Image (cartoon, rainbow, N blue to C red; front, side):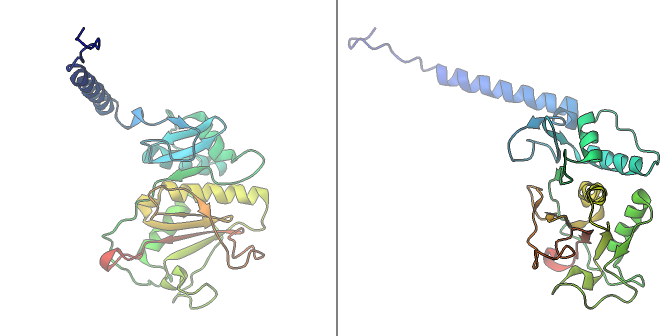
Length: 260
């Protein structure tokens, strides 16, 4: 004890705490290297943000489940092919609750279940219309959708391009957008539309997808959070403008200074 009756501070304690913190962080980093992306996959959270460290998440009855990008692509492809009765890829290692939610949708209502962080490429060349009325990038997207979903009811483009019927500065006029119709607006068709919408978000990085709009919601590759947001249609009474009867998807424009 000192003359004042106060015990002297142990000046070594801060250094001990710091050393302990460094050791713990080192162990976590080592585990991440050894176990790879799977260490973060499957983490659940009940808050509004994406699961920490996960590229994609699926909202299930038990909370959010984190997936890496490859798992998201595999899961959305599997449920889409299974819905057609086609052979699906192996989904071992993916939470059954994820596959069930992607296949069935939220209970009692169709809606967004899968989100992925946006990643808009900034070094793409700008492209011009081809004979199909689509840019090569959009044509590649069309072919990729057909490979998984088969024959689809498509619109929003035409040989030589379209010059009217869409909003001002629409990506349809550039040949960069495709509408995939699910008519009439029914619960079953909405669920089918969400199968496609989720697949597009999961594959957005590979296919240079910029926006997906469906069912009063939209997803953007320019959003690092990757969450679906409410879509404000110019006429709330128009189911076409609200994208209730079709999924709108467009691709990045490319060109100088990362034009969208």
